[in-house]
Amino acid sequence: MTLFDNLNKILIQGDSWKTILGGLWVTIQISLFALILGTVLGSLVCLLRTRKNPVAKGIAAVYIAVLRGTPVLMLLLLLYYGVFARAGFPPVAVAVITFALNVSAHIAELLRSALEAADKGQNEAARTLGFSAWSAFRLVTLPQVLRIAKPVYQSTIVNLIQWTSVVGYVTITDLTRVINNTASRTMQPLLTISIGMLIYLALSYIVFGIFALSDKLKKRGGGVS
Image (cartoon, rainbow, N blue to C red; front, side, top):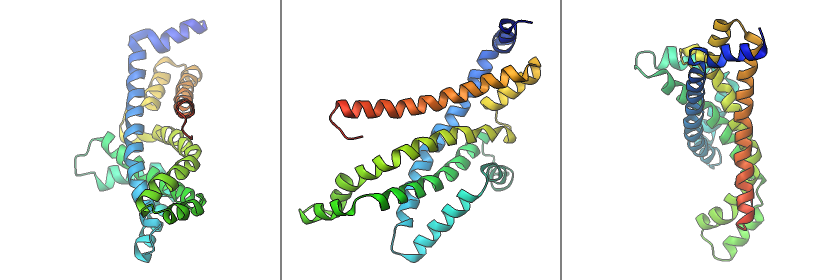
């Protein structure tokens, strides 16, 4: 059997491409919603982590330590079969919550590190010139934080997409599970899994491309990336 015949068997016969696209869409949905929720939650945790209140700071530190140190698959199984088992939550919703919690801990620590790396002298200068604390943060500190955090943040997005490959353990038919099922059905594991890897690789480079495009647009608009 030729390579073309194998590709036809994997991607075309029985409208397999539609099934693969369906699994890809599930992966994208989980990743996108988890990223949005995780970014918001991570920003709030970072805010607590940088407070002078020792209680708030301690709670945030424990939150980050536990979620960063817990395998995301174990957290997914705990929430799906334990916490939300009787609540009737859809598996996809549980997956979004799981990955949002996990990524929020990484984002909180990322933002805290970026805040510490930002030039505090510029903020103090802005305050001296009459800026309010909020205006100085928004106009001076925040752009620095975003610039410092951007490279690691885009890597966090790529990692999140890769982490979602375990959702098949809670009956979600994502891209990885579709690829696995297709490999079993066609008896072509090497070629089928290679196709799956290429799709994940393409998603990663799409993320990097979006960030690169945003940098170019800012430079053309006279902004600072």
